Amino acid sequence: MSAPIDVPSYTGPYTELFERLPEQQQAELSEIYTKLDALPAGLSITVGNLKGGVSKTTTVMYLALMLGLKGDSVLVVDSDATNRSALLWSAASAEWPDNVVVKAWAGDDHTGKRITGRDMVERVRAVRGRYRHLLVDTGPQMREYLAAALKVTQDFIVCSSPYPLDTQQIMPSVDLAAEVESMKDGPLFVTVLMSKARKGTISLREALEDLSNDEVAYFDQPISQLETYALGAGSVPSDFREYIQVLGELVDAQEESE
Ligand SMILES: Nc1ncnc2c1ncn2[C@@H]1O[C@H](COP(=O)(O)OP(=O)(O)OP(=O)(O)O)[C@@H](O)[C@H]1O
Ligand SMILES: [Mg+2]
Image 1: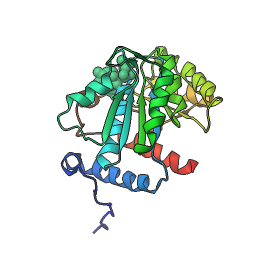
Image 2: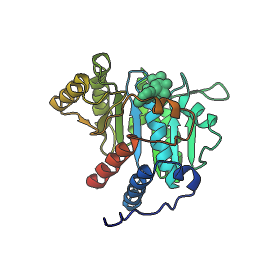
Image 3: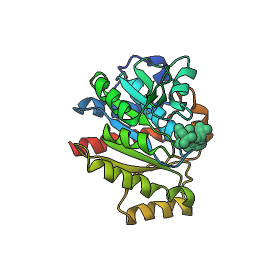
Image 4: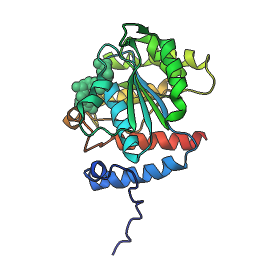
């Protein structure tokens, strides 16, 4: 008989949402939750790319919800006023966890006044202490908000598909991060997340080789092109799949940097 696996039990407030995940995912997440508790600081991440439609919002929401199910407070800043898809996602779900707070801090506010990148930075700084984790979703071609988001976060996830027209857009984002890092206190870690990828394809292999050659870090776990992810939009997903490994890599990297 094999020894029972010692899995920490779930202690968060969302038992129902958590227990509908596949058992394997519950076990993996529980282990990550234990590691997260041991970290002095929470996660602080911008997800971006100057390119559109590369899973930025999906990545923010999956990460925010995995952290939220743990019971930690999470601030999600939606800085993409062109579609406000993070805000709409949270509003569309009847079972949205109330410890995951989404703020649309870009574009026009309810009085018609424009919230600038600088305003967004001020707003984030004013409330940062109230939340364990911070995630900023950014829009394509919105340098002002992307630069602002990078000022207030420690990690920058650059989402990209592995196809040439998309991978060409990675370096401008990496360069922008270097520019912002030189003007801010503390480091900014840039990691590329390959999304809408297919395992074992030439495009994925070549895209990762190019990143290695350019000395740009990437997640070992790419996100596959799967209907599951698209179907998760507007909900609290009942299947986080490969995003669990991505969260695990983020937590391990944070452990190492401390
Ligand atoms: N891994 C995936 N597999 C399949 N569909 C995906 C995947 N990731 C995202 N999608 C779908 O692709 C579309 C674009 O994704 P998403 O909104 O996350 O991208 P985005 O980078 O935020 O886009 P935008 O630049 O418009 O803000 C959505 O319909 C989403 O559900
Ligand atoms: Mg988006």
